[in-house]
Image (cartoon, rainbow, N blue to C red; front, side, top):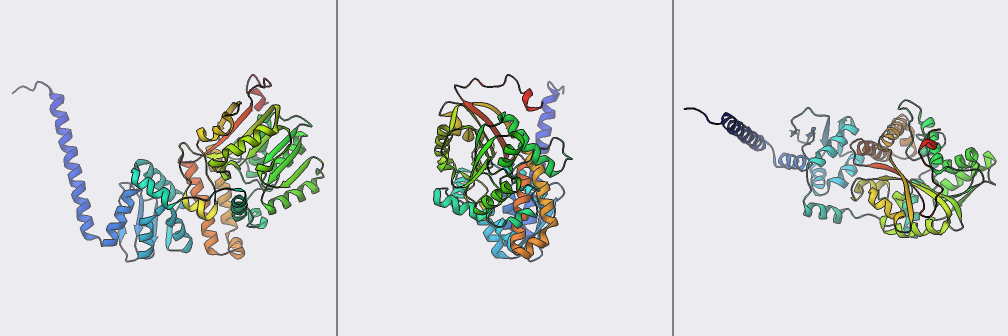
Amino acid sequence: MKRENPDLFGAASNERDVGIARTKSRDNAREQDSRLSFEGRLTRGLLNSVGNPPIRVTLWNGESIFTATSNPVADMRIANRSCLLKMLINPELYFGDAYCNGSIEVDGDLVKLIEAVYQGLARVRSTGLRSRLSKWLNHGHVNTLSDSRENIHHHYDLGNEFYKLWLDLQMVYTCAYFSSPDITLEQAQIAKMDHVCRKLRLRPDETVVEAGCGWGAMALHMATQYGVRVKAFNISHEQIDYAKARAHALGVEHRVEFIEDDYRNVNGRFDVFVSVGMLEHVGREFYPELRRVIYRCLDDNGRGLIHSIGRNQPNPFNPWIERRIFPGAYPPSLREMLEVVEDWDFSVLDVENLRQHYALTLKHWLQRFENASSRVKEMYDECFVRAWRLYLAGSIASFNTGDMQLFQVLFARGTSNDIPWTRAYLYN
């Protein structure tokens, strides 16, 4: 009998082959499940729920569960039933806690393990119920005036000696700018500060207000290298003391004033507003207050720059990092970030994403942290070391997989025509 449409028969044959393969796969899964204990089947379900990443999980009873089709990138050992059950209830929070207290051990590259989970989650679409449950279980801290001080104290007042162990020489704790991937961290942090200053086109004797100044490196760089006068605000007592000591040592107290106070209390009029790495700590519900501060403090031809960790879509921050490392943190989407400047007649002049620069910055930090881990353990304890290792490794994974972004937004008063024609000024 003559076939009128050979392709139709071929397509039907392919569909049958795919159907047979799926049936065999389901049969194999059922057969494997029949050999697993109840806890083993729960573990298989857990791996399924995060997109079957290439991670081998070994339970306390010796069972090994692996659901991916590619080779494992790392092995994870779960020490007891209690740890597994907590992971099933709230994996986003309890994985971190279990890793820190030793209930979970990882053999292999921790960064690759977390990347595999993030890539798996990207393949799994969360149900509305699951998403709502996660938000209910993992509600974050708020950033009122009193709570902000406590949240900042939790992270930044751990001790300057701790941060000196793994940051660059100027203690810059924000994304660096690598003109080449093989320059040093010190060079890249100076390059970042110059990149910001060039975007702002700083001129000698202009006035600058900085909201959230860290240990003072940016304010001191603007004053010493660009000749501006800076008022820098921060609510971390240890950071402000350190910054004041550096200003005194450099002999620039007359050009830089470090003020231990909340950004909401900024007053006066300035040519430039700059905030590098603070927006993450503001909280979206307080963006209108930050907007009012910027509006009232910028002169008629004023301009500003906000540098912040961000996300592609609005989502809560990782609950373990928000509770254990960075209370009150919320990285905004670009749309949310623009809410800070769009409503009150500011013009957005430039937007840049430095995501890969932050991944590389974090790699430098993690390597230096690991080199100093024995000293960190002496200062704190093993749980602290594991927590910060996980935080840094998880952050690298977030930026590598595109889960997190780093946005720089340049803006000016809408009525200002003091705007460059091209971007040549950034590179000359």
